[in-house]
Image (cartoon, rainbow, N blue to C red; front, side, top):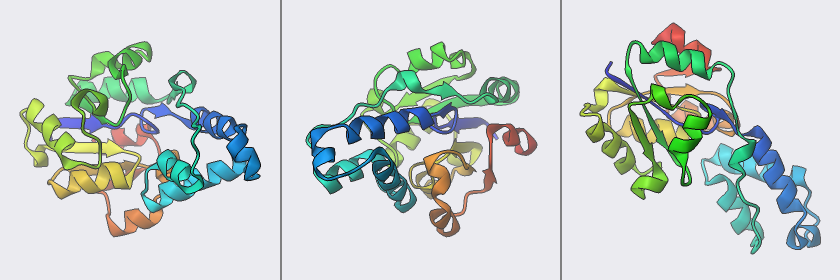
Length: 207
């Protein structure tokens, strides 16, 4: 194996506080109040969208036809505790990369988390103007790494965005069963990853 590619949200970074706040902010809008929707109701809708393999927030916005939307607050993200040790260990054996649907400034955020130095390749949807599950973003990353699909792993929390497209072009896949993507059990049965782990630390038993 030559390159390990990682997703970011709910893979390296815990987004729990972001989603809780986003649903809370959305519930405080006049539109949500008129519909009698609470933060818990909206979070449940986000979970349902995740389970179905649909765009998490966009699905909820479209369902209730919200015109006012709550922003995603990157400042509420926290790095998973085991991420630095796991990345440092794996970077000693493989080249590491990122393939992630992220807004502008991903490299700066990775720097702030203290993990940028472990990645040789950082492919963000914002920078390349392609989003997972579009297989072209994976192909772009492989080309950048001069790596054949069978020489690479895609490691991520989502079956729909990470496992399915990566598998379709011949990459190996590891499902990190964390966060909202960790709810995609049914999708995982239909599109089995090569490995499933409950945390990043478990990667060290496989790789």
